Image (cartoon, rainbow, N blue to C red; front, side):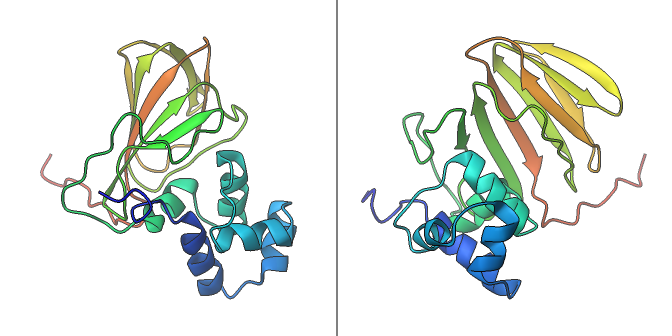
Length: 187
């Protein structure tokens, strides 16, 4: 398989989203705190944003990193993501485990991230601690999770989390925000 052909094209996804919102690069730069030249380089695939910069762009575009990453790659019915695939190798490491625009998103977080950042997703989410430990704040309660623990949250729950030990790895699996998840009325 030609790695260059399959390279993640996050810049094209950023451009599509910006144009769909009818925003100029200058507006996105102002909202994100990033420069117009840098954003232009990202959109033209001449620069790769760090996950922190991509999050700032996503916020400016009213979306999430996960959605931009999903929109960056074409969906495939069968796809293997190898452990050494390194589209994003910035610290903290955030690695998409499912490529393309699907009904399901899965990401692996290694190390720490912006612990002060609060998240709220439209649909359900599951966090699995593969290594290390995390503390999750959700619905006003703190949950301490260790290796092998999982935390399930229904859509709409505001939450934030942080790694509490070095070399922590967390797997996050979620129903994509573009999916209108139906409630189970059979219960």
